[in-house]
Image (tube, rainbow over all chains, first blue to last red):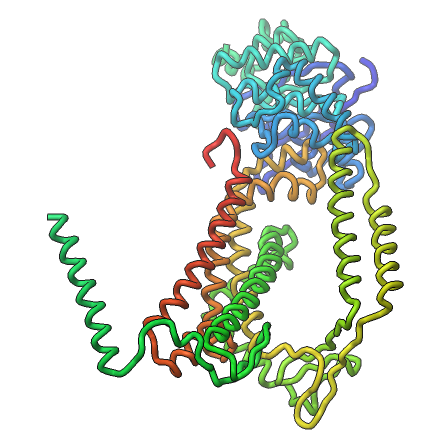
Length: 244
Length: 371
């Protein structure tokens, strides 16, 4: 394995007295695709939210692209411009057009000229297959279209790592595929991806590794074939028997 | 059945009008609006336009209305600035800032406004030293129980050139900003400030060459028991403005807090994940969305402030209620007309404010969502 782009070492996190993440160790290589699954409340979302510090961890180290995540604002800015995130609820800005959503950060954070930012945004919107919705507002789009805008918006920052937090859980079944197709394409282009999802087909198709979490711990991690056909841990077996 | 009710209602109204008319006649009280051109015969201690005791009651009405507008417009401005700051402070993660804002809100919105007006007037401003012992700021500004006296700038002939220079500067600013915004769309940066500075300096230079310096400073000075010269801001105005602004700001703070909290946490998270600093996220993502929740109740607060300014009568600030529905009414006795005019004026002011705010609200409404 080449030098990891994400290095998490003995990380612990509490919400008040509740111990959400216990002794997490995880290294992610450049270009690696990781799918994280587990029952709800197992800490999988919290784990990826720690990687761009939407949540602050309390113990242990997290290093992203060689930058240590501590309280420092400078480090935080550097990491957030390298790490894109896609949320379960899309979280598009409803008062801005699709194009404005996509150019907000390139203009205000990366200080790109507006025309250049718009050109990039239109290219990425074409890549997620909604080139003609640029001037609409999020409220005028379907859920699947909104989530693809959210992916394009994150890609506009030209990130090296993408985090997906249950990107298809809020979608109607017929829209799940259009979002997954975009994610598969992204994976094939070599993006480093961490994906919290229950889409086991997606995991089989693109994941290099599947991680199973329960009660704040990484219980099992393995290549998808081995993970699905031959789960070692009892809790993994139980979980898989319920979702597959 | 409905026709019967309607008929009864009409009858009642006719009887009411006839009754008022006959009573007024019996008491020898005139009706009609003729009194508006009669001589008022009393002085007013704050007039934004020329007014003497020889002016008409119609003039009194205008003076009062302008005084009401002055305190309301300034009150709305200060209450909005303070209210927004307090509302944001209420959500601060800093314990001290957060609690200070909370204590402010709880004190100022829970004490009756009339008492607050009286507190500032009788409790604070009237207890300042007399003009002879006035607190002096560099012998140019004085604070006493007669109010605040500040130097006035008096424009002589030729000041028009300066006004023209100012207008040119303003026009240049608008044009440059427009040009820069259009250019930005093509990805080029256009300078604004440097050309603006050059234009402004040049036009003021020309004005100075043409007109010299036609301005003089009228510095107030103590003569006898009071100050002469300068501009006097009367304590009644200061007290009313303070009370209205501070009181309304407390309500606006809560409206702003609720508005910001109505924006889902995911919006802030998405902005943070995109690398936007907190302040940028607040001004570009959170506040624009909060505004659509804030504007309707904020409008109510503006209307309340304007109407509450009629409490001026308690400390004799010469607002429309005090000088028109008060003094004028006692002198003329035509209660029906005077109260009617005053009510119509407040109603018009309120409707105008509502209309403007509704227009603004419609402009920021979300597309594709029920907002």
